[in-house]
Length: 266
Picture 1 (tube, rainbow, N blue to C red):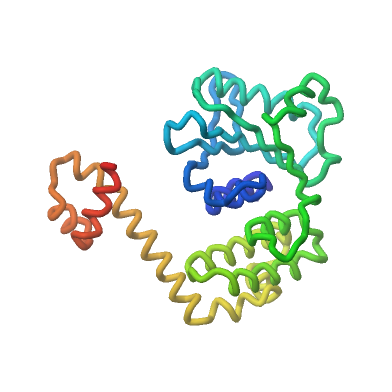
Picture 2 (cartoon, one colour):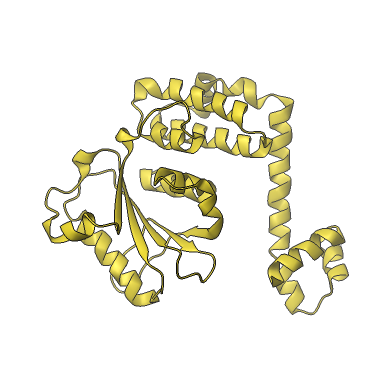
């Protein structure tokens, strides 16, 4: 798994982490949709895009780029993609570019043509190795730090985050998602280890055998099945079926279907 893919998966699953990373409230994520867009003509792809859910022109569009290799053409490509997006989609919102580097030394050495943009509020650069370690660091920021942690400290950092998740998160399903993502990061960093070896290293073999964890896993499967069924709701409504007929066809409670239909119409 490439590092930018790992970050895309992180922000897609836990979008609040992005806003915590740039010094804002994690609840801001509730107003955004995270996506990735390939632009026409030059086939530029933006690593990530946080788009406002509403048509509020006062909300920023956030362009996200993750760069873990030295590339002197990096800023040329990033700003070309951003302005191509603005040209093609013509948004009315202001924007900000957030660039994530593991360390400062990977920045392009020649950035003179873009220095006014880079020194303006339009661009925010985040250096992961400079994120402060503190007792109140969120679990999300901790996972980001885990991605760039040295190999000899990764296991200890991961176990600390797992313990933090167990202590601070009351929602068992969210706790399970966090623990599984921590495991994914460690597997990414130690590709020669099997999943069983990683589980043993992090003490996950014991955690995964607990009744609470198994129940959360089963609950997650059920939620996934429910979401899959409800994806058919718009098509069935267009076909003229009423809510009772849809509930019967999908083998769901009428109240579940009614609530989902209400969300779709709002």
